[in-house]
Length: 368
Image (cartoon, rainbow, N blue to C red):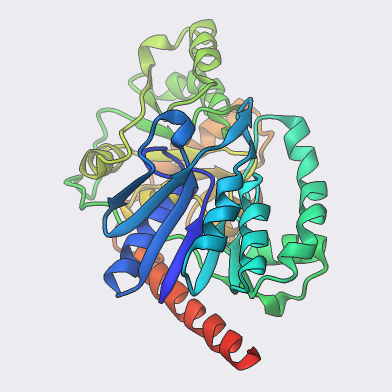
């Protein structure tokens, strides 16, 4: 089975889509598939071709304005030129998606699309998403399957696109961090909180930072680790200074390839927080749960779904900081849930995709 995954960014970039494609591609390769990741990166000096974990990575040049990709014509050309059985388009937010879908149609290849819907710090970009989906509808409607990583996406995108739910497959992200040496019972001499995610305004780090003075009123030894990197760092540091909590806050990312370090550090905190405006099935939360950490999230999108399943505690997105503080403190007192969570693994994710691809190719063979 020869599969090409078209995605806007890939390693060494850090992000949820990049991690998803890495974990899925490498497992499919180990299962005997020929997997190529087709992405951008030549404009950033990355090699045009390399092998990562048994996956062939090919990069083309992209022309971007600001932080959005406006054109990557090499995606279209490579898909038309390559000898693949199936195209998997990962993420719909950039012009990589329509170019990949058009290339697949021109080459008469079946294709599937995973939305990977996420938030954005730009209100204009966020408001433009429905119009972007409508513009892509003719191409999305011709996909063999549309893949959602959370159930709510089926209703959201199916409703906006007018595409029946039977055309969707729900395949959640997985989790697989090296085992943490963290003891099952949190240490009571210090409260350690981690707010996870890229440093963007929509990720909501500022919400837990605003709650920190209220937390410190009850637990003066508490510390907050804002685990990520990104353009919002300066504003977060200024906010910490304004609140007088700079000595209780660390802002630092863990490298993407440092899985053992990430597991050890996340496994050593008492509570993980993600108060984001929009997430689908956030890998950082799934991994925290797999490590047995209590998690507090905003009552939005896929985070709401995790709360409804009993995995996490949710608070309204626009909660008063005192409400956020109360939720964090309450979760800190809960016993560890390590070993009790029923969570998908990356192996589960890869197996489901392998079965999906086989089904799509069988249907395509019957159709031809």
